[in-house]
Image 1 (tube, helix red, strand yellow):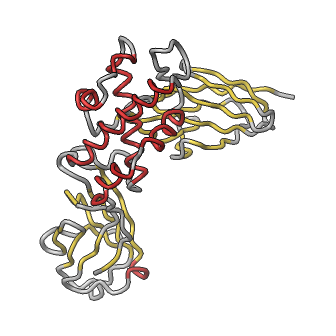
Image 2: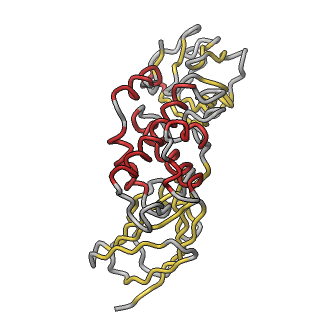
Image 3: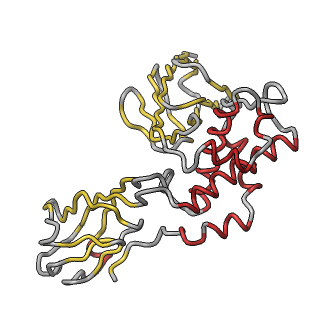
Length: 291
């Protein structure tokens, strides 16, 4: 049976786990570029583990975009170049903030600042998950979204009606394109905190499919989000120190290449009702609709 090599390169990933579903084999790659030998009949699943402070964006196969899912099965029938990419995500809180909630942080070891920063990134993703928000949604300046609306699904969009976006508050609208034609702000629509309000009758102008590129979020990370981020990271530190569950290495260090799921489980366990209560006003993901 013919064997091939997959060459793996990464940006912003701490680890790539390769699961050979055919042979029940699991291989972790932490040094890159890396190679993995397989046969054309093998079913392979690639799992991206972003480095601390990074968020996965996509896989490419031989320079062609393949999937935005960090867990993806790729059918390889020859030698291929696999690239996994993650981008930096600004943290919601600082190491200094987390330290105030974890006076025993020095027990993490000499490199505690790096380790706390790593746990802050885990806490931040737990917050995103809890609020059903996109990764990094609460960073200062917000993040960009592209949404496409089917005119038939939206129904009538008459003069003066508001098209409420899926994410808010809206910080900026880069473009509104209706059936390939770019609309003009303050002539065709105005921007409001939750979407755009049409200044022309959409039915008269026969708007069908509308594509909107916009930035939503906050000019600065909300104080409650930052506080919960720091407290949750500190709670994870307490849990690690108290239970002595450091997975790899000496009893006073964390292995930063350990898959985030190891610590994500701790984040879920440490997410108390009081922390959830602080976040209750930030569940802002809503169905897009005309109101």
